[in-house]
Every structure is written in C-alpha cells, then in structure tokens.
Amino acid sequence: MQKKQNIIVRIGKAFWNMKERGIIIPTVVYAILVHIVNPIFFTAGNINNLLRQSGFVFISGIGMTLVLISAGIDLSVGSVLALSCVTVGIFMVNMGIPVVPAIILAILIGAVIGLVNGTIIVKFKTPPMIMTLGMMFMARGLVYITTKGLPIYPMPKNYQAIEQTSLLGIPTLVWLSVFLCIIFHIILTRTTFGRSVYAIGGNAAAAKLSGIPIGRVTVSVYAISGVMAAITGIMMGSRLGSAQPSVGSGQEMIVIAACIVGGTSTFGGRGTILGTAIGAIFMNMLTNSMTLMRVDIYYQNLVVGAVLVFAVILDQYSRESTMRGTRKIKKGAEDTTPERQTGDMTNV
Image 1 (tube, rainbow, N blue to C red):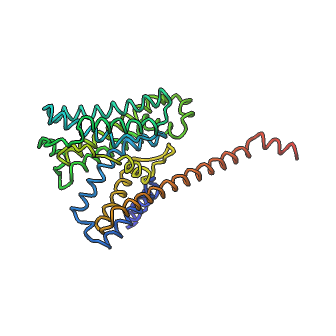
Image 2 (tube, helix red, strand yellow):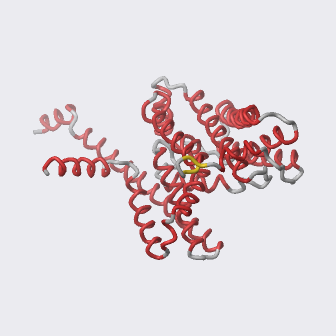
Image 3 (spheres, helix red, strand yellow):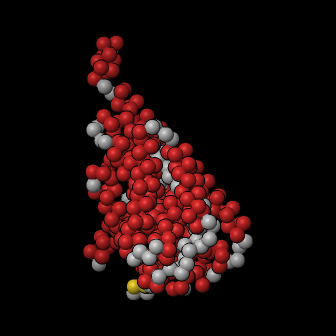
C-alpha cells in the first residue's frame, strides 16, 4: 500500500513539474465539460476526426515551434503547404512521376523555400515577419500560376491510401504526428542543436559569445519549418484525393495560435513540442465542440481569436514576471558582494 502511494506521489510531482501542465489541465477540463453537454464528443469517430485535424495543425506546428523558440516567425507555412500539395499533384497526375519520388521532390521544395527564408533573414538582416510574409504571397502566387486556380485530380489510389488508411483503428496521420513529436522532442531537449535554438531565442548576443553558429542554426530552423509544412500539404492532398489551390489558406494563423496556446513564447527562448501538440488538440477541440453544439462559424472565429489574445497576454505577463524576478536576483547579488560588505564595515 505504501509503495503504491509513493508511486502516485511521484507521478503527481512529475506532472506538476511538467511545463505543459498549464495547457493540459484546461484541455482535460474543457473536454469533460463538452462531453457533459454533448455525449457525442467522446465517440470513437469524433475523437479520430479531432486527432486527425489536430495532426494537420501539429505537423506544421513543429517547425513553427522551433522558429518561435529562436525568436523568429514563419508566415509562409500555409502557402508552402499549398505549393507542396499542388506540386506533388502535378508530378503524379500531369507528369506521371511515381508516388515516392513525387513526395520526395515536394518535400525538397518545402526545404528549399525554408532555406531561402532563413538565408535572406540571416544574410540581409531582414525581419522574419517581412521576409516570410513576402514568401507567403510568392508561394501562393506560384500555386495559382501553375494550376490556373483549378484543382488537380484524380490522385493515384496508393497516394490517397497514405492518409486515408488506419492502423489499429487510428489514422496514419495520427501515428505520423506521434512519431514526429517524439523525434523533435528528443532533438529539442537532448541535442546540441536543440539547446542552441533555445539559447538563440533567449539571448542571441550571449549565444554568439558562447560560440553558437547563430546563422547556421537559424537557417536550419526555417528549413525544418518548410519541410514540416510540405509534409502537411502532402498529407492534406492524400486526405482530399485532390490538390486544391486554396488549401492551407490562413493555416499559418491557426498554427501560430496552437504554438502560443501550447506555451511557446512569441519572444523566443521558451516552448516545447508536447505543448504545441496539446495546443493543436485544444484549438481543434474548440472548433469541433462548437460545431457539435451548432455554434455559428462566425462566433467560432470570435472565440478562437479571443483565446489567442488571452494566450498572448499570459505570455507577456509571464515574460515580465520572469524579468522582474531576474532583476531582483541580480540586485540581491549586488547587495551581498564582498565590496559592498567591505564598504559597510568601513562606514561602521
């Protein structure tokens, strides 16, 4: 009995020490409340649909999390998503390229766009918001130029099967999301690259003095963001069975919202992959639950926007509290320096 109690205590302490507890608790509470109001919420079909929609946001959110932690931002993910979706369709349907090479080429396109974003930001000191905003319009323009605004279909059956099949009753997209979550959690928390990303976002000047290759890490972060957006676009094309030019419109805002709600700071230096995963689930849970309760779409947008603003306010408050605490610690250290103590003794 005592052993079981110790295990429960250790689990409780581990949970309380988790950085993500601030989003886990409201997510669980909200899910319970929604289930009470509408029992359909916890049916297998709805949960699968919720996790699938969350996966589309989360995969793009992985790259966005790294970018935000490094004190940047990537507004081009929605357009890169669309461009990858359209190009994989062109490669397979119009050019007859097999599925696997077409997917690899589409991912490479996403990587190249990310590399261009990162390189221009680093080499020309361009503000990330301006650079990625420009790329957002350029990539979306390429989508409409190559398709003339028309969808590309029908996609090969083996390509559609990538996202539309399930393993153990769980969609393949969810399994892919779990796999990527584990991989990038390890990268961020257990590798030199991950620590460098946090260091650059926390204090770029100190990171440079520490010998961290800021330029190389920054370019890598944007390249990863491009790759993650491309993978999302490929999976969306597989899900839809066609390449729609309008796919991914506004996706960047939803992805950024999921990252911020999940605890990633817009000022850099703070954030986790698991937090983004839960943030993506929470944001999709909001829209999913409101749809089940037949709330008008316009009110849904209002609620999602309000949640985002609230999360940003909390982020700002947390940052200012941390800064105040740091200043107090520095002041206390200065007050107890040997020189200050010697001066006090001399005055006596």
